[in-house]
Structures are given as structure tokens and as C-alpha cells.
Length: 243
Image 1 (cartoon, rainbow, N blue to C red):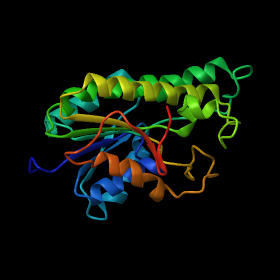
Image 2 (cartoon, rainbow, N blue to C red):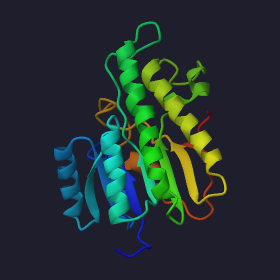
Image 3 (cartoon, rainbow, N blue to C red):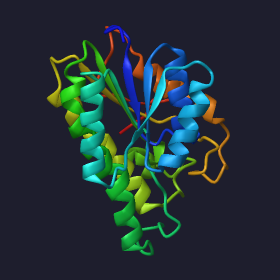
């Protein structure tokens, strides 16, 4: 494979926004690694994309399994020697999440373990490969619900969405973006938090007003930022999001 072809890893890419991000990155010319915890679903997704002539392959990847993450990084290093794009898309919600007074502690723990700690683990494992790329991009799939400003704004349409586990996990993810962007200043690695919008997916119970294809556009845009890329931003389709 020519060295100028970008290699992209998308976590949770077997369905929803992740699958569409993988598709759009592949259509833009990247070789896309479909990260999936469910190997069978991952194989189906990779086969679907490959059938359209896109350069795609499955990488088994479970954010809650450090051995799985290490194996994925070793596989990418052996085959490609670098990683140009990391899209931290995988995330969960939990029916037992809720307001601080009532949320199940176990549910909150599950959400934090996946959405924040799992993403941090993947990012740490992939950073050596990202540093090998000439202009690497990390996109963290965040949410307006992760904004402290929005959570405290009674005029916001999201004000009543009191999900302490999910909202806190995305706020923590934003902290990862801010600190990592500062740590990586002066390097070729750019990192941003991107809120795709309210998308109809399994995660939202298909109650959103955007399709997965529409929701994938902004994350893909930030994954493909050029030489003038700005790092450490929190954005949504309408523009910058307050932290």
C-alpha cells in the first residue's frame, strides 16, 4: 500500500454513526479499519463496505479489554506502521442511568468505563502509531450533553437531560481532548471533540432528527483537516460548543 494513503481506525464502526464515518472516510480514499467488539457484526459491516470497492478491514477491538486494544495496535503496526486517523466513536448508554439522586452506580461505572476509560486506553495504545503519521488527526465523538455550560443553562433544550453517567463520561472525554491537545502541541497530531448532533441511532433509540449519514459528516470533516488544522476544539454542526 502506498505510504501516502491515510490509514484510519474507527471504533464502534459496525453500525450507526461509526459505520457511516468508516464509509465516508473510505470514500475519501482512506484505508479504514473497522473497530468492532462484536466480531460477527464487524465482519458484516466490513464486507458491506468492501463490496462497494472500498479499502476496509475488520480490527477486533473491545474498549473494555486491554488485551484486545494491545492486539489491535500491534496488528496495525505490523501491517501499516502508522495510523493517520483515530476516530473514537464507540460509546454506550444505559437504561439504569439517570439523575444524580437515582442513577444506578453500576450503570454509571459501566458508562464511564467504556466512554472515557476505554477511549483513553485506545488513544494511549494508538498514540505511538499516530506519531508516525505526517499529519495525524484524533476525533473524539462527544455530545452537547458533555458541556458543563449547557448542563447549567435552563434555557437549553438539553437542560432536562439529566443522565449523570453519560453526561459525565462526555465531559471527561472533553477533558481528554483539552489535555491531549495541550500535550501534543508542536507535534503533527491534532485532536478535537466533535458533537455530531442528535442522530437517529440505536444509542438514541432512533429519536434523533439527523440520519447517521448526516451525523457522520462533521466527524469526517475533522478527521480530514488539512495543514491549517486547529487542535483542542469542541464543535457541533452549528459551530463551536461551550465547554
